[in-house]
Length: 484
Image 1 (cartoon, rainbow, N blue to C red):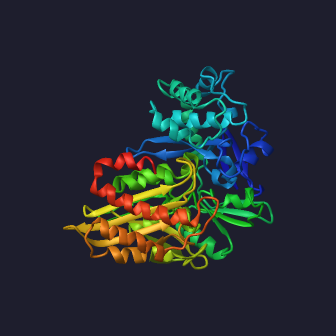
Image 2: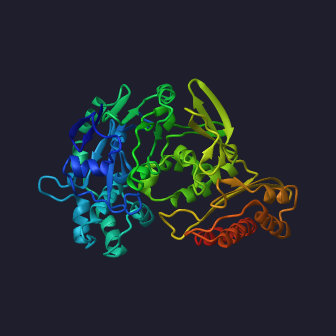
Image 3: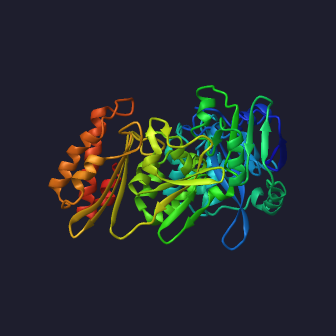
């Protein structure tokens, strides 16, 4: 059985199909049809809902963290122990919520199909920011694509509803909601079971290891932003899933003198602060990783584990010399991330083995790390080419070189020939040009609807040139980076 709050209503579910998404649960099982299906792939934002989770801050104070999610990519099993809020829950005692009223008064409301998703994104923004600037508003709304009314009215609604906000019914009932969430906090392995399909929800790494050993054919579910597409886009059935999002040990970020250890189930939005503090370019790229809804849901371990050749984080992590800790039963092994990827969608992971955490070396003064993403859209788009450069230059000589790309091969991959040209050479334009030429020996990219092979190779070469120019003339870095 799993338990969660539907606004303030306790829901206890056991016999549901684990392949059921929150979107279809709301529409078909609860009769709340305000949440709409637009794309069923997490691109349009029409299905946005907000999930509240009980959190404890550094001072020991309990509070509820509200996050916007794409309900079309969220399986019901991931709600275990949480609060689900849909657009129907905002109106209170006959009065529109302030974000709804702002959409009306600022003329931001559209045909009605996409408006509920905008409202829920604004609600999450209001809950998480007292006075958001325009950049935060853009970030919160970037995952809601339809703009029939234009951008200005919706941004005006964000400003009106979030600046000088007034307490609402959720604030008034916060203490009550915290108490109810504590009462349903999972204490044992949860399960959804429809007879021929099941999803198990462990709470510890040990339980996860035991379950995965017992069900090696199970699919591991973290954020689900990739796995759910098998159900929503390809109409497949997933007989057994194990949801790892309630394993607290795999959602920690621990900082040591020489490294960060990031649990594999840590949401990308939770990784932002720690990674940005060490590597600002990593943070800038995370801002362009899909949408906020996806970053709130997708995990760092999932972005590695799905072994996509166009995943945004693996090239950066490879260039940084990151490692993954793989767990099977009581056995753990540590593997360089570059060795984890074998071939297209093939990894070094063994049966019943899972990524427990990612180890990222901390930055040093000698490193010159930069990352770049080329895509057709600035926000909410997949890379055509993703590049990461990490050189160590001492007395004008390149003493270490790590260059990695996504979108250039069947796997995220280091550019070995390029690195060999750079290593031990002066950091000058002539060497960079030879390294650019060597990239043609490292990669034979494919042509697809995102980019031609010629475009990809030329882009990769130009990004290396860009890296060199930025390091030589750092005053133009911000201006140039904005155009990538």
